[in-house]
Amino acid sequence: MSTLEAAPAGILYVQKLGFAKPGPKYAREDSAATDSDNSLGQAMEESEYEEDEPRDDEDVDDSVKEDMKKLEDTFPGISIRFRLVNRIGEGTFSTVYKAEDILYDQYKNDWDTFQSTLVDNWANPPAKRRRVEGETGRSISIKRRKPRYVALKKIYVTSSPHRIQNELELLHDLRGCRSVCPLITAFRYQDQVVAVLPFFPHTDFRIQYRTFMVADMRHYFRSLFTALHSVHKHNILHRDIKPTNFLYNPDLREGVLVDFGLAEREGSEYTGTCLCANPSYIRRSKFLQSYHYSQCSTTASTGYPKTDSRPSRRANRAGTRGFRAPEVLFKCTSQTTKIDMWSAGVILLTLLGRRFPFFNSADDVDAMIEMASIFGTRRMKIAAAMHGQVFETNIPTIGEKGYSWEKLVKWASCVEELTESEKQATRLLAGLMELDPYKRLSAREALQHEFFTDPIDHDVEWGGNPEDSADTGEDGEDKEDEEADEVAMV
Image 1 (cartoon, helix red, strand yellow):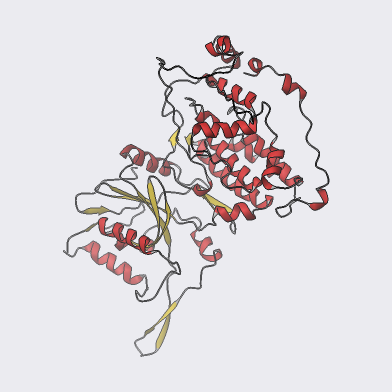
Image 2 (tube, one colour):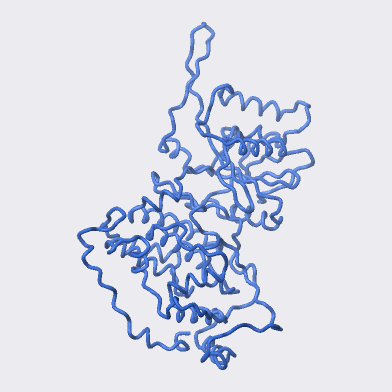
């Protein structure tokens, strides 16, 4: 079933993915009265709201009010079905608004799996009552319907039609997946497209990374990995995993994965097989035959050819700065769902290190330098060679070996020693932020990690355990890793 259909000129399509009741599907823009107009008017009366009373406690900026008014004016009929409340998100390709679904009771809302729970648990004020005069003249108290909110995602016209169709189709395919935001319906008027999604109240990540303890992180990532497992089972790459795209509610200990604007099916953009997809003996053979190994392995690279006749490598580099996986930076043409797991690891590193954003690079080159500062030049060269690339840097502060994740988390969070629960989370972090995507944990493997199956309840507030701060000994170095040959590891 198509999730997006074009309506005739001057007509707005309002069917909700097959859940609409029998009857007129269209509301005309002209002033002529129709059956749809009567049914819509009756539905608005049945909502039992008085327009002169405030229904939301949100402070809306004047510029936001003007923006919402512009949407209502340029998208005929949308104000009949939704009452815009506030702007809750704005990105490169879309803007998201919080809106009340005026016609909620007119449809069978099978998509709504958490609305009733949210109404009862998210500190909503009690339902207001209004008094009307009965036939006998006595005043009767009538309970007013609680508002049902949705999120309206206005997709900019700068997005290609293929991108819009792809996003809506993927959302439709993922309906019913736990912790994944479902698509309710979509409207189109001329070149404007609005997707209707559930509204999910959540806390700001800027509060979470300052206050979350390890137990909170466990609930957060159990929900996130559950969502990623569902998405990856459908062979879909989200490509933009970051805190603002996972809306987490700490009271419910649940979150929803949103924004599939950059998502794609695995292998849909085939541009050739990357070297990393070959067995290790083939990778080693090609590396030994490469010009870099035979001519440049003994001396550092001093520049690049002024005229290079070789075609540039093209690969999908979609994502957000600071959350791109190393294979994305190295322009791997065989990217898998493991790129989402790396991004999830960056979120865990942010929570453990109490620094947001943790990586703050301006471009791909800076991003690789940030990685090299952590992993060391030797491991970065191996990772680059795995994808048929070369990594070189002459920055003296970047060492050859790099640092362990425990050291990095201690330095970032300014503690002398990690608790046992933090060490357990750090072991999960090491499996997520693995340079080799084929050794990186999948979402299913992450859910089976000891961090979830055998949790350690040794949790203290940020700052560590003062009783354990005396032990500041450094981890022993692995001599075999130091002596490992680069070619053998490739």
